[in-house]
Length: 509
Ligand SMILES: [Fe+2]
Image (cartoon, rainbow, N blue to C red; front, top):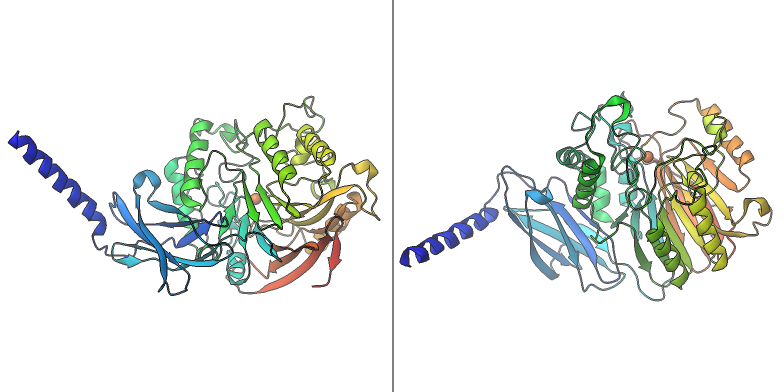
């Protein structure tokens, strides 16, 4: 019995000492990936960091949050335990916060403190304005993240929506500006858990990306490249492509999802699709158009099963959730965080191909879109604002219930508008064609798509969506270059829609 007690004592002491290893002073700063925050609610926000070091094991990371920039007035603090099963990422859902309030937060570990992050809770009740920045398609190899740097400097932003392609899965030089020295790590297409972790760790060492995460809360959703090009539930175009053996897609998908949740400041729940409220003005519904219910694509709108009702982008459960939430909200503006273009779009001027539709976008899933349009009509929904990524181009599009009844002059019969965000760095048309030719393509796109009010197929940047009681407007911002670090940025066009009109008007800024 005595021996047993002794062993127990030794065990407790051993455990105590190993726990204390986390208190050991480290030789180098473990906070090399900065800090981040996200998924703001009116009373809660996720804070994030990662600790890096040799043979870390279990790490107890301290956090604190307060209302002043120097964190002299700490209102809440605690400790989060992380380990190698989480890739040493640290995430905490800070609760019981005040609405519409800036908070500052910091982490401590190994004798070092992280940078201080700033975040903001969502507003509640009656408010005058909501401002959301919208970004997507940030390919590290395509250019410098100057757009993130410029966005970091913007004030009065409630949240940054990242609509996907936060990372790209390709090996170096496969989809890149090969004249740059920004080469993907690891130096191969990412497939395993370790691969995905290494890729996120590389992106998150970028100073501009760190800065924008440090200063604004993100609300993110994946598109395809967080897994592999043109991903869906059962497979992806860039999986086992060209006879490569990349193993079981389900194993790869599960690794990609795990690492996304490790590295992104996202509140974990049953689904990635989720709802946010910004006072009584805006309800934001972030959709998952890749891994929740997307069935395999068809090769063209000629395919026999093109109109098949079983072919879905959202899937039954998410589509019901989407419609129910649109119907039940009293918010003036219903913003939909959408990955691929929702509008009908004839893209022949871009592709030059015989068939005019993009099968990876909503044009490739007509039956489910028709079901949604029917629901919008039946429930008399209006003021829908789709914000979309994926194309690396800027678009402003009116959304008619029925294209055959669309009147270009009055915009009658429209239920909403769609704003497409340019890529942050990913290539669009002018990387491959002379600028004069691209301008002609933009004009041709307008000609064959009467509901398309604006197309910019040549610049990189983002837009800011501002909503008040009277209007919703998107202002585009473009960086001057991506092939070297630069602070140059120009304010592009602004398009707005008045409440209840669903009609786009170009406004002078
Ligand atoms: Fe992309």
